[in-house]
Image (cartoon, rainbow, N blue to C red; front, side):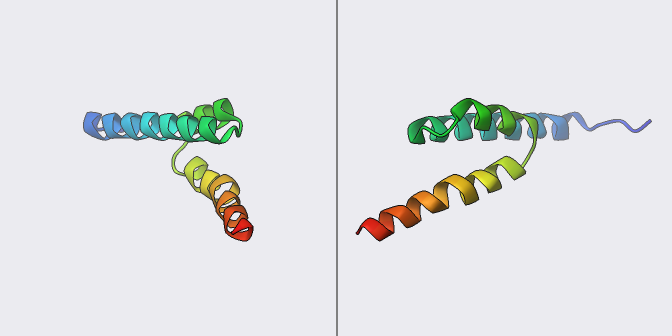
Length: 68
């Protein structure tokens, strides 16, 4: 069996925690299923961040531009 480098494992866990936390905080501010985004952000990397950007952030910015 192959052995996992502990530093790489630590960086992966740190990245997942950061992504999940940031997605949760930002989704909570925008009232868009914060728990869903936070938990999904803890499970995989980087797909939740990409989809959050495409599905939540971009439409919100477009809506603000149309109102101006």
